[in-house]
Length: 154
Image (cartoon, rainbow, N blue to C red; front, side):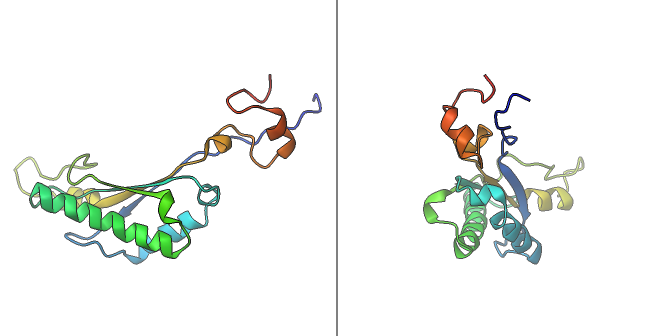
C-alpha cells in the first residue's frame, strides 16, 4: 500500500417505487414505510435532488391521468417535506399514462388489473451530489488532494 487514503466506493442514487390504489393518491402503510426508509438513507442525508415521477394506468382521459399522477407525486412530496426534505430539493414530474411498466390490457382487450395496478405508482429518485459520486466523501484529506472530476488514484 502506498499510504494514500482509500476512497469509499461512489454512492449511487437511491431509487424506489411506491404503489397507489385505482383513482387514489392516498399513501398506503407500505408507501409510508418506504418513504421513511428513504428519509433515513445516506443518499437523502447527502442533500441531493429528489425527483418524483408520478404515473397512472391508462383508464380515464389523458388530462385525468396527468392530474392523478401529479396528485400521487404531491402526496409523496408532502410526506417527504413533513419528514424534513426542503421544498427546493424536490421536483415533480407528472407522467400520466406514459411509460407503463406493465400492460394495461390483456390480449383479449379486457383490462389487465395487475398491470394497471403496477402502473399506478410514483418512482422516487434521490440523486447524489457530484462530489459524492466521485467516491471522496468522508475523507477530507483525500477530498482536499483530489480535484473534482479527476480520479483519486492518479
